[in-house]
Image 1 (tube, rainbow, N blue to C red):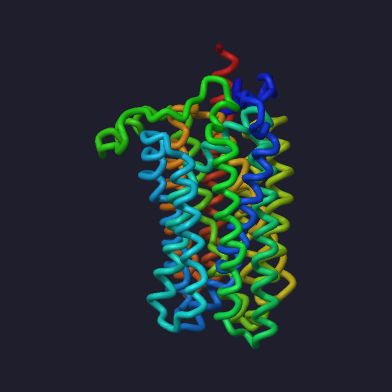
Image 2: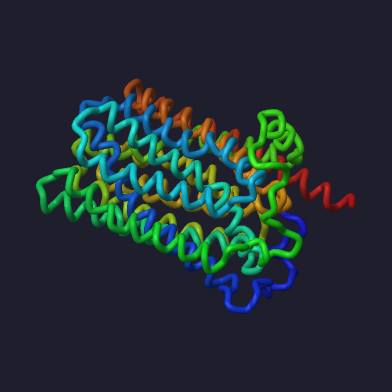
Length: 422
C-alpha cells in the first residue's frame, strides 16, 4: 500500500515558474485558508449537539442529523470529485465550496426552528463536499514536493489552529451572553469573509498548482460535464488496492461516533455546561493536530502500517467518552480528537499515493463517499445505541474496530508479499 511515490525519492524542487509560490509556502497559505474556514464551521460544529437539543432534538435526531451532515460532506464527493477531474476547474470548485460553508453558518444563530437549523447544519457540510476533492487534489500536487505525509500533516495542523480558535471564540461569546447562540454564531462571519478573500488571492498567485508535480495536469479529462456513465467508468478504473483500503476506512468510520452525540451526552448527563463544550472541542482539535503531524511524519517514514493505531484509538472512544465521570469522558473526547487527526491527514495521504494525478479527484470523491456512508451509519448507530444501552454501544464499537483492524493487517501483509514477488 505504500510503494514508490512522489513523496519518496523524487526531486523536491517545485516546477512553478518564477514569481509564483514554491511548494511549502503554497501548503502553508492553503493551510491558513483552511484555518480561517475552520474557525467558522468548527466553531459551529462544537455546539451543534447542544444547539439542536436546545431546539428540541433528541439524541437520535442529533445522531442522524450530524451523521447525515457528515455523509453529505463525503458522499456527494462521489459526484464533485469526477466533476472536478472532468472540468479541470479545481480552483472554481474549491472557492464555491468555501462560499457555501461561509454563508451557511451565521444564520444558525438566528433560527429558532429545528428543521431550519438541521438544514443549515447539512448545508454547511455540503459546502465541504463541493470543495474537498478539488482542494485535496490541488494540495496533493504541492505535497508531491514536500512529501505526502508531511504536506497533508502541516496543512491539517494549520487547519486545526482554526478548529481550536473557532470553538474558543464561540465559548467566550456564549459565556459572555449567557449561552445565547445568536451572537456566538454571527461572529463567525468575519473569519469566513477573510477565508474567501485569501483563497481568491491564492488562486491568482498560483493558478496552476499541478506544475509542482511532474506529470500532473489540470486539463479536463473529457468535456465539461461528465455523464453518469462517464462517472461510473472512471470509478470502475480505480485499482483493487484502493477499494480494499476504502473498505477498511468505512469499517472503522462506522464505529466512530460524531461529536454531536458526544457533546449531547456531556450536557445531558450534566458533566459539562453548554459553554464548556466548545472548550473541550478545542482541546480535542489540539490533539487532532498533534496526531496528524505525528502520523504524517511516521507515514512518510514507515508507510501505511502506521494506520493500525486508528481502529485501536477509535475502539477506546465510546468506553471513555460516554462515561458518567467527567474526567474519563474528557479523556474519551481527546482520544476521539486523535483518531480524527489521523482520519483527516494520513488517510488522505495514502489515497494520493495509491492513485495517479489524472484520477485523483475521482478517487478522493469515491473514498469520501465510502467514508460518508459509514459516517451516516455511525452517527445514527451511536445515537440509537446511546438511548438503548451504553454498554451495548461500547461492545458494538469495539467489534467493528476489531474487524477493521483485521482487514488492515491482512491488506498490509498481502502488500508486503506482493512486493517480495516482484
